[in-house]
Length: 406
Ligand code: UTP
Image (cartoon, rainbow, N blue to C red; front, top):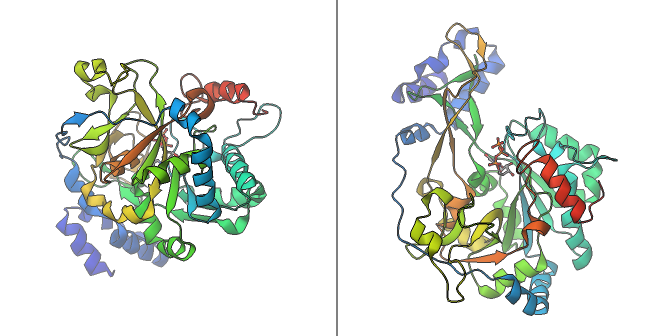
């Protein structure tokens, strides 16, 4: 994109200030800014005033519960193992987030949760996947999604740690797309004189970002039919767990979702359900009293299973999911920026919007889903904060209970 084209694109969106310092930039900075303007999707700015979409009619979606899983364990395990050994399953680590709540200056996966020896979050994830590699005798393709903010550090860390014993050739890193950040009036912030302020575009960006990185070819060439997508911060989760894969494959659904039984009817987790007959997730604040009281045929709460961000997607269904059909979450955040007089400002209060699309919104684009119950104490130890709920502290306790050496 040349200068005139960039100026035109910006003028169309009332963002001409982005070129305010253009003449002061070096040639390289000028070229980089023009590329950034070309690549930035400014249409997100239209979504600032999106009304929260009216929700459809909710109804319960039965989960495969522990009792059934136990009774069918051999059958599910065999089906899953066969799928893994046929090379049809990949794992995809979502590691593009900023991890702001943890407050570390490095990618979240580099956080050391060890006490008597180093044990990094990335290492925990790889160890969990290695269990399945050993069990199946098959190296599983591992995609790692980063963002431009943490890509280089993440890749160097894997290199430095020798991929924590994983086969290097099986690991592919790709960067997710970024979304611009703006003030409350929709004016883009600049982070430098030659750079629009951006943040990762949410974890639903994984599929389109993967295609943009040319990885659709890898899926095709390797005959990958299922992708287990999971968050970086749950150090206990089982990845490419054969029973979960087997259950999803045998149920012949578009996606499997690991879920945990709610601790209380009003627990603050998103709950799996149907919305207008399609799989969906209802947020805890959207659950009516009537839904909280509803019972299934066994007399158990009908909306009883919360998602833990561990999904198995059928690749052939993913083309149904398009970014423009998914909800856009416009989130108020503190956005560091360059002021009118060229000074860097780190605001103490939210000063603008970031734009994110979330994996849970992908689910509603698909036709069918199997919620698959896992035991919270064995598989759910998210690290969001340093202390308190969902923290390094709480995860360490759970890891100890599960025999992980810290
Ligand atoms: P979170 O919603 O916990 O966000 O991400 P976060 O960025 O890690 O942490 P905070 O909110 O800033 O404290 C859940 C998962 O989705 C990934 C994260 O890396 C984590 O694995 N994620 C999130 C992305 O890969 N990209 C994004 O744009 C956002």
